Amino acid sequence: MEGRLLGGRYRLVRQLGEGGMGEVWEARDETLDRQVAVKVISLLAGGGSRGDEARARFLREARITARLQHAHVVTVHDLGESSTQRGTAPFLVMELVRGEGLDTKIREGSVGLAEAARWGAQICDALGDAHAHNVMHRDIKPSNILVTPAGTVKVLDFGVARAADPCASADRLTQTGFIVGTPPYMAPEQARGYPEPRSDLYALGCLLFELVTGRLPFQAPDSIGYLTAHLSQQPPAPSSVAAGVPEAWDALLLKLLRKDPAERYANAADAARALRRLADAPDPAPAATAQLPETLPSPPARSAPGKPATLRSAIAVAVWFLVTLVAATVTAVNVNGVSDGRDIAGGAAAVAAATGWLIVWFAVQARPHWQARIALPRRFLAPVLLFCLYAALIAVDVADAASLDGINWDYWLPVGGVPTLALAGLLAVTAALTPRTKRPTRGIGYGLAGVNAVAVLGTFTHLVSGNPIWFQYFGFVSPPWVPIAVGASAVALYCTREITTRRAGSASSLLSQP
Figure (tube, rainbow, N blue to C red):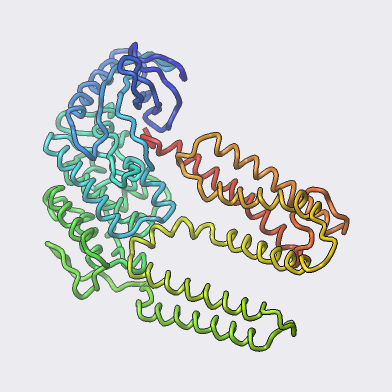
């Protein structure tokens, strides 16, 4: 469909996502000369009277949804019908919002409690405005929430689930054989076919539970299992699933996840106020003092409590003291027996590094939102440490050889220097990858990965045969397995990160799952 013109004005540029309802495309509005997003609802494609009736109902529902004008709702610009391979299908034209899906944030584990509360409150603001216009979402889930570069959320697909239901009617949403919504996030009354505005709050509770703990409140192998759990099982307290979750969060989420809609928050505005109280808290409140406007009975005892902050601080200080003691001992012993200042410099560097780490650790513990910001860099800690070890070994060998005559710079620079620069470049590109990274940057990464693969092979051949190979990492690095391990891990890391970010980008550039 790329390049096709829909409605006489929307030129499809590239596909952003595909799901059960249809496809999402980035398009150019040739009338207003602007980029937009077009969702083609291929689920409703087809001919005959039933197909015509379904599309007419979809367009009627979509017009109601298009009335929503809210800062946290993706705006609908236009709607129409277009011919596809499966027949005539309706389409929606919406604002094109760049950002990252909340499902990607959950996979990365990079969301703090305060940030989750702020986003939850913004989702509630969007739901409150929609409910005031008699519009329910019916499919709140992470892939339908977009986090913009400014750090705010946009709710996608308002009313699409209702509009795409072939069995929808004024008094009953669904009939046997068709379920509107996503089972892992579906309220009990919605599973029975009778949703109401507070069904969206239940789905929000499932979403926030997953955001805070890293898993859904219920675990099931299939859709039937999820629906059964929502209908019959009580959710666990979030603090029993993930360490460090305050009881205030337990109270809020368990209230959102009540089976009876009347026992949940009365409306989205009440839920938003409760979430903003959590977002404004500078630190997670202790269990004994955590308060909500409406509290619940005490949750079950935690099955996996985290270490108290004082104990973690004591462990951090003990590690710092041990590193300092070892560094002082090694410096005093003078391992190599040469008084050239290396032992003193090495000991001082070790103490400085340990002290810097301790300061950063205390700063992060004092600011929970920093923990989310360092979650992504921590993923690259292992290869970066390996590269630092590799660089340190090279520096030592070069320093030793620098005092001798006849340094073979022609070998060090072209043979080992170029692969080493390529290795540093590959790690830098890997760390910079995001779902929004463009194709040229990804191509540069693949090129660097190829260069490093050749260098790994050359270094391995040198290690096995003993004969220098023209293109390899520095051959004099000892132990010799270090450059091979660093290069192989860098290539593997780039390929893994490239695949995951590309998939996340296709799913969350706009409407993750149509």
